[in-house]
Image (cartoon, rainbow, N blue to C red):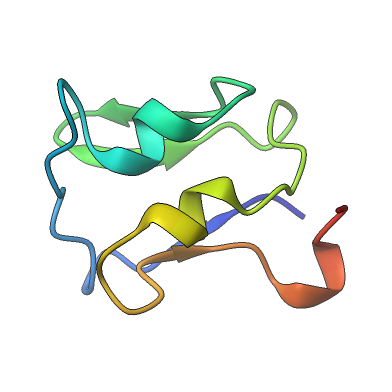
Length: 69
């Protein structure tokens, strides 16, 4: 299962050039499309790096049962 996004909580926080979750994803599975965060499921390796850097409370996260580290 890939990272999940709660669009009601996502603030599109600012990293250096893109939202933090996009910048931190080691697999380039998280991107901005049509003004919102999109996760490409087959690229996401469930590392939860995106969830760790997200300043909003669980706006993006990997369900604990899917975490692979």
